Image 1 (cartoon, rainbow, N blue to C red):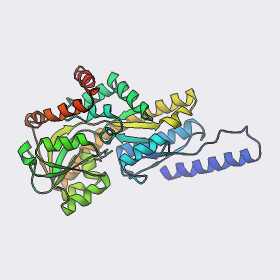
Image 2 (image 1 turned 90 degrees about the vertical axis):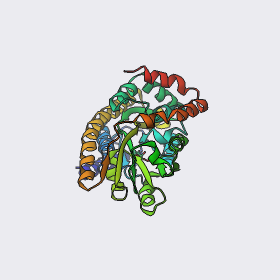
Image 3 (image 1 turned 60 degrees about the vertical axis):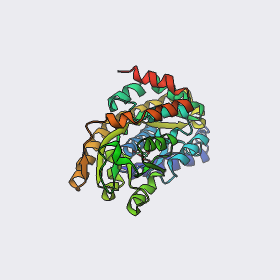
Image 4 (image 1 turned 90 degrees about the horizontal axis):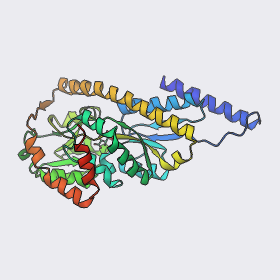
Amino acid sequence: MFQSFKATRRLATGLAAGAVALGTLAAAPAHAEWRGWNIHVEDYPVSAAMDWFTEELAKRTDGRLTGQVYHGGVLGSQPDAIEQVRLGAIDFAVFNLGPMGPTVPEANVVNLPFIFKSVDHMHRVLDGKVGEMLGAAMAEKGLVALAWYDSGARSFYTVGKPIATPDDVVGLKIRVMNNELFVGMIEALGGNATPMAFSEVYQSLKTGVVDGAENNWPSYESTNHFEVARYYSGTEHLIIPECFCMSKSVWDGLSADDQELVRALAKESAEMQRELWAARSQASKAAVEAAGITYVEVPDKAPFQAAMDPVYEKAVEAVPELAPLIDAIKSVD
Ligand code: GTR
């Protein structure tokens, strides 16, 4: 279906170009196909929702606006892609807010460990005032936040031994996403953090560059990290949303009607993504368990939570704007 859609679009674009050359159409505004950045493999909830967005966009505008999503991070690492979208070199993307902190300091509020009570709480918060405030901070940096995708909860996984208490992290080298806040999070547990691109984690786990990493079930499964890190410990220490972002320079060039359409499609794609996400999380967990990993439940998260006080203090000290945002999150039931 994906293939035939692309073929149809190429044909439509070719016909339109021919018609313009013959002078049979009023001059259409120049339009290059939008390029979308995505870090995940093609068969992933984020990927399916982004593909749906580009298909609908072309359909609903009769091919006037078209896009192509480049999956698997082929357009670069996430920190690089954030810069590219800000510059308008990449038109849109779905970014995890983890590596967004260095660019948009306010985004770090969602990167604080245990800030959300649950994934549902995160959605209630992001779909309300805090989401708007974060969107405003991102827009100042050239990124228009159109909708929030789900990325579940992140837990630790390790090669040599499971993690059940903070003491188990002492001395371990743990890969984190690119953000000093996560370095502080691992240090607060007594481990050594290694910030690293997503694409390098498999090899690093395999060769012992790191002893472990942390992620949600679908990423643990789709990257095959579970093949080398056989202990998954349900710490659920981070619940970080993902953002469907458009480059502000591209967005500002759209008519009000097109902006409305693009925003509506992005929001609809997020609804689809959240449903796909829920199903995939269960399927991924079942798949890696069937493949023989050891799942260590961590029913008592309090010791991990207690260790995070210095992380909060340091974050607020560095970015005082985080204090009212933390209060705003806590005021949402
Ligand atoms: C995934 C997330 C990606 C990326 C990755 C990572 O869960 O969807 O955008 O941030 O984690 O750990 O780098």
